[in-house]
Length: 179
Image (cartoon, rainbow, N blue to C red; front, top):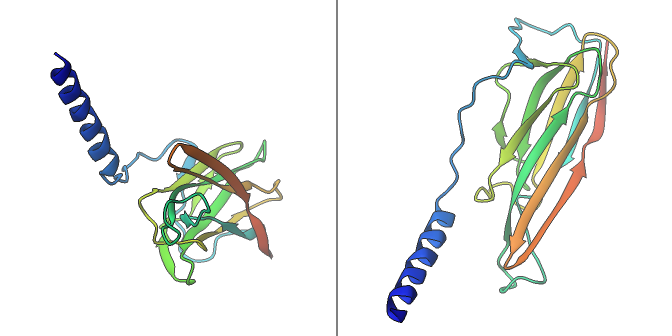
């Protein structure tokens, strides 16, 4: 009976180990109601907006790591929240860059309107370390009228052994856009 429970425990550990090693797949989601695609054939009628830099780390090095040259893989969620209670904002682009400055992914193919008080997020899987320690996003947004600026941040989570950690990085305006 004892050998049966040891064998069963071993199988459970193997299943958990291998299921954790399977890369996460990107889901294809339907477009929610609070997001409206914009068919633009030129410049959008934007009266104000911003270009926002958001630091994000897909990998870091830790003094707690078992090996000094092994990076810790991190999951990143970029959150864009429209804080205006009355008006939508337009998300023109969301670009993800690596630590060498190379463009890794453009998340917005078509600009879209984000309803008042709505939010949208973009995820980088912990298995995607292409961004490295200097990964970042550039978010370009605008509005057809004066609005309160959106709250844009990256939430980073990770674990090393039995230690879990998380933090957030706020976005920094690097350019004002106005007509």
